Amino acid sequence: MKSEDSALTKLFKLLPSVEKPSFRQPFMVKLKWTFIVVLFYFLLSSVRIVGVALASYEQFRFLEIVLGSRFGSLTTLGIGPIVTAGIILQLLVGSQIIGWDLTKPEDRKKFQMWDKFLAILFCFVEGFAYVFSGAIPVIGGIEMIIFVGLQLALGGLIVILLDEIVSKWGFGSGVSLFIAAGVSSQIFIRLFSIFPTTCQPGIISTCIPSLSNPPSGLLWRSLGALISQNLPLFLTTIMPMISTIFVFLLVVYIQGISIEIPLAFGSLRGFGRSWPLRLLYTSNIPVILAAALLANLQLLGRFGAVPKGELICSPLACFDQRGQIVSGFLYYLSRPSNFVLNAIAGILTSQEIIRAITYLLTFVILSTIFSVFWVTTAGMDPKSVAQQIAAVGLYIPGYRRDEKSIENVLKNYIPNLAVLGGIIIGLIAAAADFLGAVGSGTGILLTVMIINNYYEILSAERVEEAPPIIRKILGVE
Image (tube, rainbow, N blue to C red; front, side, top):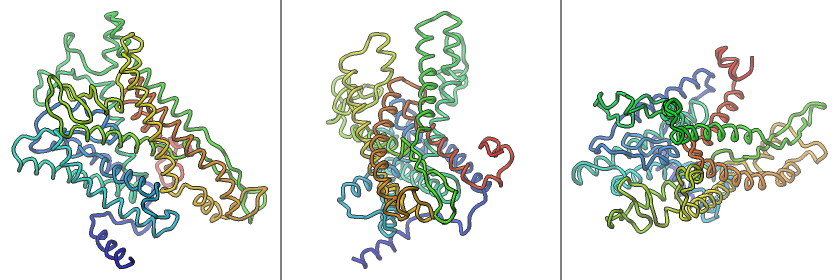
């Protein structure tokens, strides 16, 4: 068994990787690498795949938000391979199919190695899956299909390496960074774009706004509707903006709810601190994994699709000519669009109501499952946290000064917070999607939580090395 592990370790060492820095990087160096990666990611998103037909990818907008991708470009796969590998390993380890104890360093190392290997493997699997499913329309025969599939896989590999650069040389993780950057850019474009919906790259005349062809930005359309006293259009354009603000404020409020565990130093009388256990204990990870799983299922549903009257149907779903899911099993697991607006207008059907309920329940259940699994795989379980607390010489006043006592206290909170946090964040994400918020409710929730996490990460760094303006933003001046 040890010889097999040794052989696998040698194999994994051949995988492309980014070296860790040999010493702690200064604040500004980390910030520089983080910005470089973001700029490079946006650049990759602008590089079109060779051999792909011009097409509208509106039906994949939710996938672009969840996976931090841009269809038709080198970032078409986005963080899909990384997240898919993580989902599979979490399910295998969490269900004890693979008997790894992730509290042990050697098993955690195995998890990380296999996670990277599977992520690279899925770059090729998903790249060719996009092509053969028709999600990425290819111009040409089998040679061009293979060429396009390899380009998609290459883009996925670059994203994996960019994620490693951020985690080792920058701040946070590339997975979170790419989602936040993608959602933020989509929100900005949808709110403030001055180009009309008819705008086509390379054809300037189609990109000039006019009274008959107004800008596509919701802000400009709502102002135009208000001036022309077009109440239905005004409500249609203002509701997404109101929903966006509401979801933003709700997530910010819930992010601040936590339980404070009082701690004291064993060697210093009168000195202590508290250990916060957030209501959303596992942060945004359950939503990322749940949304990515549903996104992968939607892509899987396009395999084997054949024309059936005016629709294109596969064993799992039927799609209209625009590629939108209109019926089938996956229809009830897909995000309902404009649900609240349709309810206000009184045009909701019983089918849409059932779809909303099944989507909500599925999202909540998946978020809860992934939240529980993440506590174990990420070293956030009571035993691991107790080790962290004891390692710095802290104890809980009123209890014995040993690691086991701390663990027993944490067992009263962490498992319950994992379940409750998964349920709450799943409810917020799914319900926010019903509101039709700009960038999707799930996208806004993820972005707000990612920005908040980055604020905490930056605040915990050696901010005295940062320029005055950054210290002022972080509230340390």
